[in-house]
Length: 106
Image 1 (cartoon, rainbow, N blue to C red):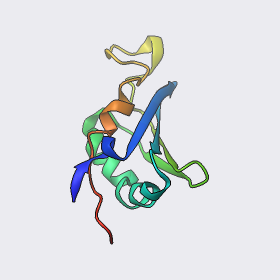
Image 2 (image 1 turned 135 degrees about the horizontal axis):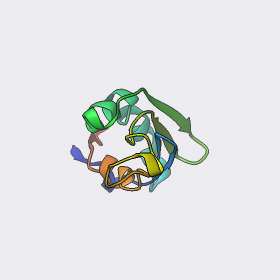
Image 3 (image 1 turned 120 degrees about the vertical axis):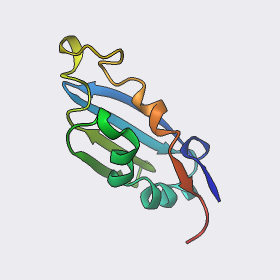
């Protein structure tokens, strides 16, 4: 069953310089394995496309039922250097929640 990530998790995002930091947190413990399987660094890289010019790193936080992503070189220089509307990456959390995931059993 395919559905948007927003049905299984919520997210929060921010910045550190030119790196966007996105936390994806499962609503329920049973959904965490789906996040681990479906929300990979490769899929996040593809989802953000040319917005992210650097590497995407994923960190697993099983005790919190969460994943944390660092999107390097994704904020046009970051903060006061960027000409982007969202220079601090605050909307990146909402953007990742539109990623379609397979919530079926594997």
